Length: 159
Length: 102
Image (cartoon, rainbow over all chains, first blue to last red; front, side, top):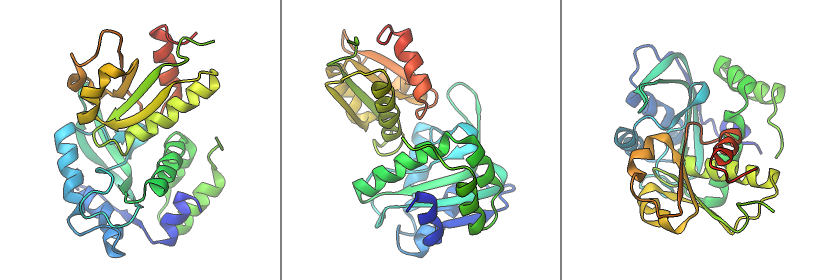
């Protein structure tokens, strides 16, 4: 099963408007589906926020993709999973060390307890994050069906 | 034969769980494409990477960690900050600029 199929199957997705939402609040919201089925604790997201506050918005990649995460086997992480969130409006993460504006409308928030599953997720996410057509389709998705259709329409190359 | 044959590469990120893994995957891709046989390729958190850096030939990390690594390299360690940790193209170009890949 692909990571996007897994997200749909486990209902680890959310779609929000995002207007005026801080990045801290967005990180919390992106983790809610993971909280809902016990993949992470209610305050797991606070560790992610602390990490981004410490190191800056390095979890925001090209193409407005954010991958908020902490360390493997973090406190409050009970299952390996990915919380996927699409925002209608861009979430502002401030500026990076070069003064470049960082913002995201796609969130892939990670929880990891199982190294093999996590490695598999990360490998697939790397492919997804380099697939601009798929990212555009995911950003336009407002239903779980649209997530699956995006993946079917713009499959990632096999390594 | 490649200049990188038998070399050791380390990929670092804040936690050693997210972007450093992505970097490792991208580095692997570059090595396979260029027929390089590394002696070692691993990833770890920057906290560990700072002290481990001197034992590696090349250390790669996302640009925000460049300051953290200042002055931690050994005499033969090449430090390479990356803008996009998933980009095998950027990694390949950086290694070529350093004269480590033809």
